[in-house]
Amino acid sequence: MTTKSVWESYSGDIRRFILSKVKNVVVTDDILQETFIKVHTKLHTLKDETKLKPWLFSIARYTILDYFRTNKLAITVEDLEIESEPLPKGHTEQDCLRGILVNLPKKYRDPLFLSDIKGLKQQEVANQLNLSLPTVKSQIQRARKQIAQGFMDCCGFKMNEDGHLVGEIQDKADCKVCQ
Image 1: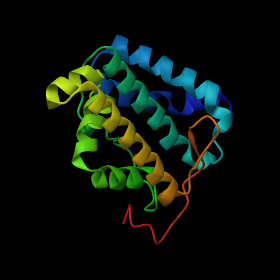
Image 2: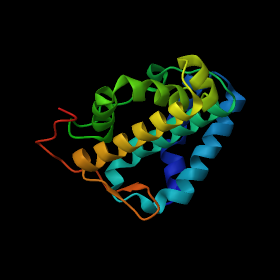
Image 3: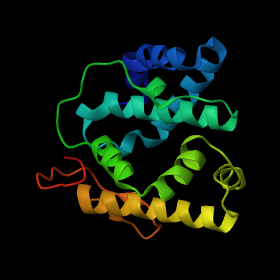
Image 4: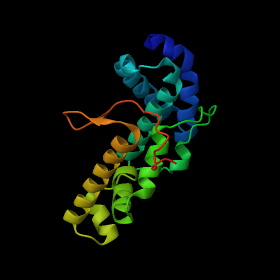
């Protein structure tokens, strides 16, 4: 599988997805190019070719989020839903993340959402929540640690020496986070 073959098969679908979110042809083409640069550099890491299409849409989705964050534009989570065929029902990272976020205490969830999803600076989060900057920084870090721990407990991920989560989703019938 080459980047060229992936481009030929999926660039049209990815482009339509991006255009439906940003509503600007020039920006769409820029984001499409950035998406496929990421695909080209990471294609060798994809272990299961049956997950190629969802993987491509995830890269596009995060590239769109980066665009909105760097340009300080607002986008809702619902706008990033993929209009494609449903994935087979199973234990997914999204199931775990939803469960982990829902179970985060509100005092951690709110600052994390404002900084990591809405892209506000931590000082802006502190001002909006009427908290001190050190408190907000601490709450965001604790939220991130709890999310990482949730992925390790539920999904079988491990923390590598650089502090990044690595691994592939494992089916855990007894997972209390996603069920």
